[in-house]
Image (cartoon, rainbow, N blue to C red):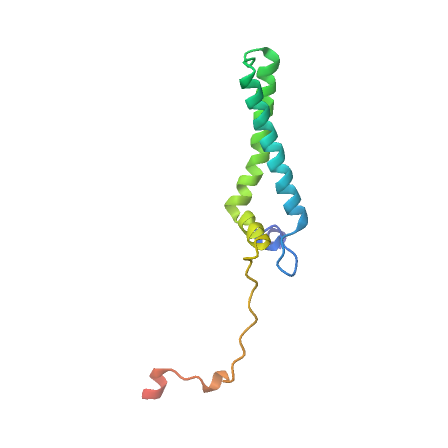
Length: 116
């Protein structure tokens, strides 16, 4: 099933660590998104927004920044960022091993079976 390969829980290595390419991609998207916001603020603070060059610069810049930040927003929505931050903060919970108690399943009885 190809859809299952792209699911956020499957974007990690076998030991539960997030994939390095996902971390690099999100870091790059944040960098480009923040750079586009910085360019927009620079054009506003120089008070040269209403020239033809700067209007086209701002429109193209904000469009590209929105596309890159949409990728980051989607990763936040799907929980991929939470998984990455949780792992690097040391709060990542690995799946526990199945408990193997001394009792076998045949010895476990319910209250209803004891009454009859």
